[in-house]
Amino acid sequence: MRSLLQATPIQASVALMSDLNKSLYPYDDLDSFFAANPITLPTGENGTIDMGQFIEAYSSIGTGG
Image (cartoon, rainbow, N blue to C red):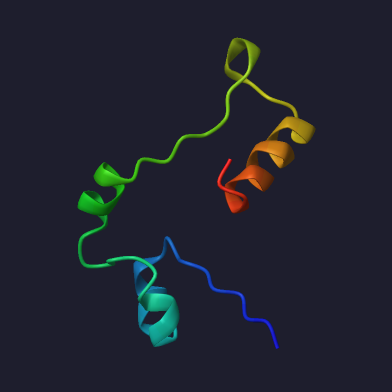
């Protein structure tokens, strides 16, 4: 059986998560975590991308690209 592990942006839902999911991010200090691990979103011409470009960029996250 495969499991889907995912974080949450909603503080109230952290208490409802499994211990494994809670271990993905330091919910008590997310500011420091994201300062050390910034999120970079893909951009294109004029700062926009189309859905195909987004899917391609998103897919590369799982492969380390």
